[in-house]
Amino acid sequence: MEHRPLISIEGLARRFGDSSQPAVFEDIWFGVDKGEFCCLIGHSGCGKTTILNVLAGLDQPSEGAVIVDNREIDGPSLDRAVIFQGHALLPWLTVMGNIAFAVSSRWPKWDRTRVQDHSRRFIELVGLKGAENKRPAQLSGGMKQRVGIARALSIQPKMLLMDEPFSALDALTRGMLQDEVLRICADTQQTVFMITHDVDEAILLADKIVLMTNGPGARIAEIVVNTMPKNERHRNDLHKHPQYYAIRNHLVEFLVNRSRAFDQEIAGQNYDPRRLKLVKPGLAAVNPPAEVVALTTGRRQ
Amino acid sequence: MTAFKNSLGLRAGLLSLLIFVAIVGLWQIATLPTAGTGPAMDPEYAKLVGAAAATGTKSSMPTPADIGATIWKHVLDPFYVRGSNDKGIGIQLAYSLGRVLLGFGLAALVAVPLGFLIGMSPLVYRALDPFIQILKPVSPLAWMPLALYTIKDSAISSIFVIFICSVWPMLINTAFGVGSVRKEWLNVARTLEVGPFRTAFKVILPAAAPTIMTGMRISVGIAWLVIVAAEMLVGGTGIGYFVWNEWNNLSIANIVTAILLIGLVGLLLDQGLAYLAKLVTYPE
Ligand SMILES: Nc1ncnc2c1ncn2[C@@H]1O[C@H](COP(=O)(O)OP(=O)(O)OP(=O)(O)O)[C@@H](O)[C@H]1O
Ligand SMILES: [Mg+2]
Image (cartoon, rainbow over all chains, first blue to last red):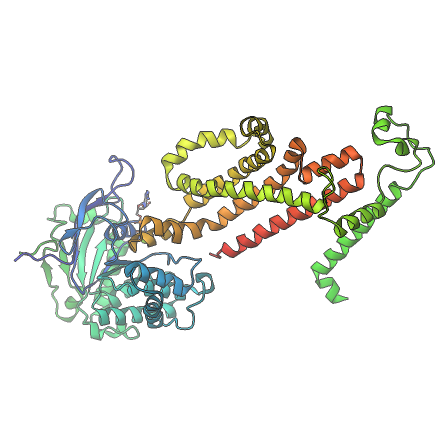
């Protein structure tokens, strides 16, 4: 039986300008399963936002394709909600207006009260009750980000694409919002693709962490499976978990050293971008030696 | 005393009052009747301004009190009609205002949709840019003979001139505002699968509205400048014609009154549009 993940990224490359320019990234293959929380980690400028834009349908790849639900995407869709790197709220609309705009785009036939009732539910969900009539300029950074999250969730998408949604926030607000997103995603069985810079955030939230090397010509180095069970991940005592440091060290080591010198690392090795290594550094900490399983991500037979 | 020192508005107001009093005072002194010892006058000019001034017994320049009396006379009866050449200053202002609003409104009807098109389509922008660049710097009054020749109606011609001069700032500002709508706002609309018309009205228009309103404010200011000149040229009615007519009557007091009123109406137009602009401005 052919199995394809819900989102399947197949041979993606993107270059800006003519074809003589080096690609920002190339030969990107990976997938995100239904209900999975997938984080993409990589240095600034390696092309993470560009990948997300392609997934959202806002940008066209130079090569390759993104298959969602067995169909190649050819543009943006209400099924894939985007939480932008800047919050991207419409500044002339209130909180309610911003969310109602999304809701009435999703269900154009709904009348005004229905749209507002639905919107209000999601405003309450992200804890912004009472701020419905405020403009974005009157909100704090964390509140704006929450409006962005509420807007994305309110259209009840099949998947969420988030571009560093928490990076502009202070630690306390970030933690609170991470918990909220985790809860909401668990409740609604969301499929999530999220970009982050923050290693701890990835360990807390992700089931699977995709590691991207530095550009130009960035690739996916490997995929780290978060072997810490979801119910054992708590923000405040994450560091006490036996697997935590092994995973964290693996990620930090990648960002500090390997992301830069990945080409040398794979020289002479049989690196196949279509059959990425699935590494489980967390298990190595519990029962060494490391269990390294090679699996295809595009198609499994 | 400290309250006074701290209130900039109060001090500025007092200074304005002082300046006003000084100007009126100097004016009063300058227009005091002299006993025929004034500087020798160009005989041509003396003939023009009349005997009283030429002999120097009374300055042809009215005193502030004369102006005050004239203004008061106009305020008491702004809308009289005594023949085609003698109408109240209120009526003349209304003619001018009507022309400005008509020409400006027509210009907005053309400039805003066209500006949308230019701002959204690089092709249209490139195609129309040479025309705009060449026509924009032309003084609107240069169109007047052409308008008179083709339209054969002086009132409509001055409306056309107002149209022409109001169209450019609105066109350019609309195109600029529409063209510089933040990409991320457009992306929000795209990810929500919002159609082109809804995007235009719900995203692009409100995003560009402050810039469009700035263009309108510039346009209405220019239109109000131009209407006076246009009416001087074509005559008949309007505050521009009134000024020219009073120059022929040599009624400086009426001219000064008209100047003050033109300034006042211009201020009101500008403030009105500033208020509208404030309504559509959003803080980022
Ligand atoms: N429209 C564009 N035209 C030309 N180059 C672009 C464009 N957009 C992105 N790039 C280039 O592509 C590369 C990747 O950009 P991208 O925004 O995807 O980075 P990123 O990984 O999201 O970085 P960050 O973590 O800082 O957000 C950068 O080097 C950038 O200069
Ligand atoms: Mg980015």
